[in-house]
Image 1 (cartoon, rainbow, N blue to C red):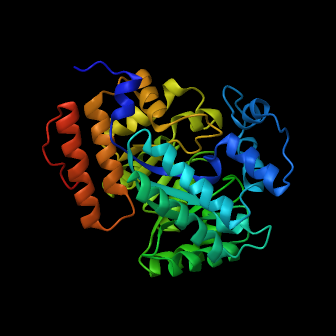
Image 2: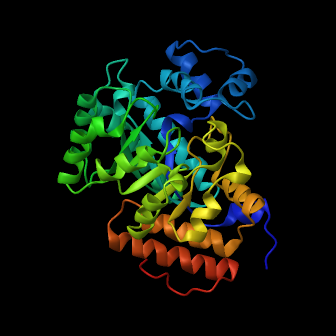
Length: 354
């Protein structure tokens, strides 16, 4: 059995499905853009700003976690800044061999300086495409509705996702504070998404119980669930999720920081994995959680003794669950499986369709 080191995990091919653009910006870039555009920040000292934005061991509620996004969003209000941050994210993930990433954000939150919704999508698309050209990382955009914003806005964003179907946008999401903002209020937007054959994922079971996951699946038709830490509290629903291969986008560090789990050693990731549920590992917000996908892999190893064959399985599951056409997924799965065989000596047997 190969010894698991950070360096080894760094080299593994990776797939990330749950990554917020406004949670993955570089502190130094925030400073540069703020100075250029005259944006107020809590501090213009890089170390102080970084300390404020990175949660570290300062655990709080999901709402407290989300408050930090006010800072990052303040410097993401021009086409130039969106293109820059999207490109830099691809540059950052390329360094740890991420082969495919889905980048999510809500265009409605980037209009304070007059950007249209279309400009907000086109600008991010431009940065992602430039990143793909330079670093070879494939990507797709997930448009986010926000639970605490009017369902009419979610419908408007769903229409935007339809407009950009097959033109950079691969899916639709519902994000934001979970408690008191039920997903079913936004079901019209998700009807529009399903009616146009677009995939969706919904943040659920993070700050609220399995009823939130039930709504996401049965009212809104979610293909994947963001987080889903509370799914274990409803065994019947968990069986349904497993039977229907509904993927859980797990974010270990973030789940601990938002108190979605009391302790990381009790995180249900291993339990779900042992049940055969499709689970993926993700960063959620690289800046706020001060993490990388390599760090998340290492956490899974330290907490649950995951080995290379487990990371291969999780990476293949992530690629199977990506919001890409089936034949594109198959090609990437084959390529990733071959890399695991060639570089890391793992059996190349083709993963079954389950």
